[in-house]
Image 1: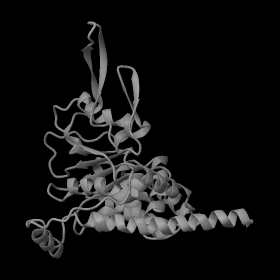
Image 2: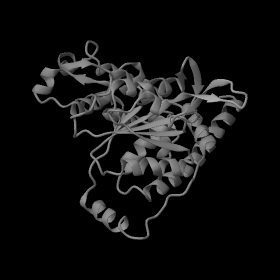
Image 3: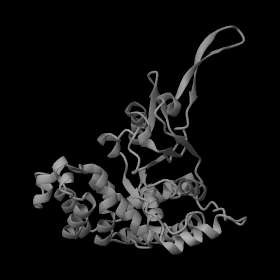
Length: 333
């Protein structure tokens, strides 16, 4: 290794160590508002550090909105919330053109930006809106700009969509299309709290002393951390585990007969990209300079379950997608 390579490596180590301290403060501040959801906080932060979007799946009342609000405050980002309903139109998200008239009587169209022009967008109960409205987010999530009346408009950077979905109610809901599901870097399941945490929630959120998290970062600092994540090295063992996991989840290329028989469609290359970024971000959040195979196993379910679909026969036989992904992750490791 040359002297310049050593200097670059030393600089990277220093940046990573400083970032680890900063991210520990970020997690501590978010935890002031969201109790007992350390794994949810870690996965959501990992997805944001990786530059991606998150699908939060959980029953009502599990602090999903509170989590997004706390993250926006601590990360120092502008944010907006859109409540998705069956009558929501694409223009309600993207914005629309209005006809203006100047003092001379000349008329012209002026674009009024919608709530998507923010740094952190919360799409609440995204599966309640029609597919046409859901797809209005697609272009912005992938290309970071929207097109209205043939004119393109860039969304602010950084830009992240944190969408929530209620897994219980299906009446009046529209399942997200596969193309949009694939745009979410991770799907994060939000569980019910245990008894001790629920007791803490009851005591600390029903009095007068509700703690407010404080800002630790801003948009520019977050983007520097996202750049650092992309510069972190990934070892050959971790790369091999990611490749094995993603390919083993595809029917036709898997060595697991359950996948070939019961999986209707599997994850594409974007799943591998998501894992490559997310394992680095998780390592950084845990104060490590490089990801390990354990990170791949921990992120397998969030990265893959929304990118796979079981056949009708498999669901009728009671095959569970979560357990299948866990088994595949264990073999890949």
